[in-house]
Image (tube, rainbow, N blue to C red; front, side):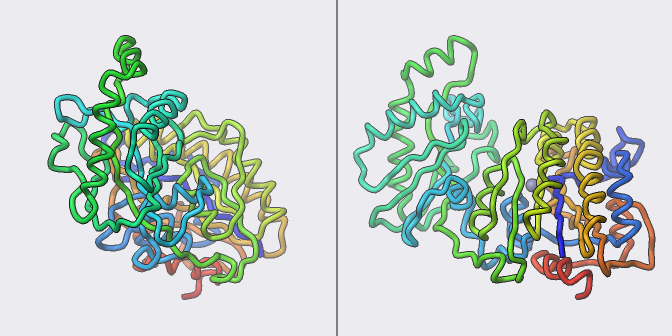
Amino acid sequence: MKYAIIIPDGAADEPLAQLGGKTPIEAAHTPNMDRVALEGRQGLVRTVPKGFESGSDVATMCLLGYDPATYHTGRAPLEAAAQHIPLAPSDWVFRCNLVTVLDGVMKDHSAGGISNAEAQRLLSDLRAALKLPGFEFYNGVSYRNLLVYRGADEFDVTTKPPHEIPEEPVAKYLPRGKGSDLLRQVMELSRGLFAEHEINQVRRETGLNPATQVWLWGQGHAPNIPKFAQRFGVKSGCMITGVDLLRGLAVLIGWDVREVEGMTSFHDTNYRGQGEATVAALDRYDLVFSHIEAPDEASHQADWKTKVAAIEHIDRYIVGPVLEKMKRYDEWRILVMPDHPTNIATRKHGYASSPFCMAGTRVRSVRSMPYSEMNAAESDLKIEQGHELMEYFLRGGNL
Ligand SMILES: [Zn+2]
């Protein structure tokens, strides 16, 4: 049996006046997603359990068949896995953003999308100045860096994602709780060190946001996640994504990660290349998981035109070729769905259940409707525990 899972991140939405009362999925021309729904079945699945924030870390973990209540230990440890950073069970990982705070207000969670070279320079100077034992910095992409703590202190802290407090005074969102004094010391040291740093002088002169300090959040220990093959009996899996978070999840569950030239998290991504890579990977792997970030990023910008275009590109260049390829195997199944909604109206992730469609061997429905949020909701097929969807899919739609 061959399995393909295609995730247009954040594609689900609500009806929009700009689209004549249609959702972006309804407005987009998606003959291939419709074929999956018409030949198979569709329904709704809750991918963000109560008590969790809607994000790709939680929702994708659910989609992969793992209950976040059991396995989610924080966002930073998942990104550490993508970088293959070795972690002992007692080690802590923090997301270490470079941010712009001016007059005590969070101006920019990304320090103007600072370059890798500038970020490396700032963090290596911070590393040299930091006299606290046990801390190690790891450079990621741009402002997204990690701090690992391998010391004796314990943490029981509350932290805040910096992208959730734009234009707000930062004082009330500083780390709180046991061990937070250590984290505040690191942040405070960076503030003094970066203030007159030559990199920031140049950035200010050229009108770019300076990196005024590091901001620590998203902490956790390494999660202890059973391998996908052990858990579901599907021997080999492959992840294709432009996002570190999903690469990390793949590493943790024992899958290979495939890169595609020109693959990004925006609409400028190489859709055609990702479609070809997904098709090619199906010959080598039992399950291929192909994730496209572009619809989510367009939603965060409230760019409904680009969101519709991204969904159409995914349909044409990824779902279409994969569906064609699947039909050459004796036994196959395909699942297409967003991990969570991202709403154009609010520019934020939503909490509504996600519409899914699946087709293939022994997947049948008595109803035949094109794929949409509304038709999925009318199907009466509702999976409340999102992590049960994987087993449902692998067993061909039998709960
Ligand atoms: Zn997402």
